[in-house]
Amino acid sequence: MSAADALTAEEVLGPDSFAAHGYPHDAWKMLRREGKVKYFDMGARPGFWAVTRRADIVWLSKQPKLFLNAPRVAVFAESPPPDPSKPNRAVLCHLLNMDPPDHADYRNLASAWFTPRAIGRRRAEIERIAEDLVDEIADREIIDFVEDFTVPLTLSVLADMLGVPRSDWRKMFAWTNQIAGASDPEYQADGSDSGEQMRITLQEMNAYFAERVEERRALGADAPDDMTSVLANADFRGGTIPTLELLSYFALLLVAGNETTRNAASGGMLALIENPGELAKLKADPSLVNKATEEIVRWTSPVIQFCRTPVDDLELHGQKIPAGENLCLLYPSANRDEDVFEDPDTFKVDRSPNPHIGFGIGEHFCLGANLARLEIRIALEKLIPRLVSVELAGPMERMRSSFLGGVKRMPVRIELR
Image (cartoon, rainbow, N blue to C red):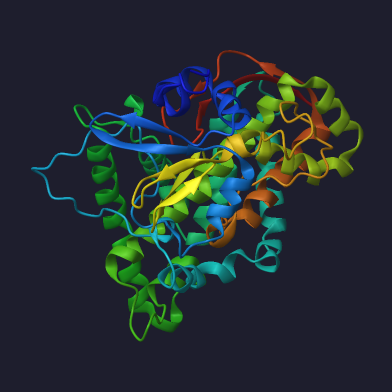
């Protein structure tokens, strides 16, 4: 038996391990080196096949007719086993669990808001927000980089795009934490499991956005120019967007638009702290900011995994995989693939080329990738030139999740000009 054969599901996709130690890059490296597409049994929960190599993930992701999203979005290793006595009701129906032709039709509803040109028009606004945040932390010795910088940066931009008033921003922050961290005890209501926590939070969020939708529809042509108005009043297949899909759209935008970018930006600062030579290189040459942004996304890979379900039986690297089973695509592993990246376990702000798939690949390429890139880039542009020194001031706390590489807290001692 090889070392890869001896790996367990907890070692490859364990939320407790992620929370305590970060990504299990050593385990994923074993699977890549041995060319393994290994099946992991999860007892009462559905098992999964771990896909760790970039080429395999790209191939699977570019064949949506052969490998479906709808049956299972991701492997939630922390979820309770299914209960046959309870009805299996869908609580979300959004882009992540849609296949063609529905996926393209729903994606197009918001895609115009995320083109390079549309996002470019927001640069001045994002720069102002970042500058204000840097000014606010300039006189403080110790800050929580997550709470005091990355959260207000990403959340305020997204809330403005949705037309959410400032008085409701903290509510949005709580909801995104509770959805992304549904399996983290810190975000669970007393006695609830991850599935129950998700339902509780979505009920509150859906009620909120249902009211906003009714307000926008009542205003008609006088509705404000924001994404809530666009979705509320969209002409979709001769009518309005169905209620479940409409409310799910808001949940997706909030979580994907806030959690992933904030975690990449926070993890990027940690990488710069842990690699002072790279920080010095970036300070000395601001023109590296675009390459540094891409390296931060590769290095942090904030989305751990998505699933694909094969329509037919297939064979992959000698493994016979039955139709209907779960193929777990591990993006952080793909972004450390030795066959693609030179010296993949080293953080390099000048890495080039950098063909990472931190935003996914294929039809499900991240809708908000242009916005995420711009937010990270501007954060670096506004923070690094004023940075005199920065170091961790305490242990970083990670979210308990097998889906998102979440950073809950990151205390830093910082000195700014």
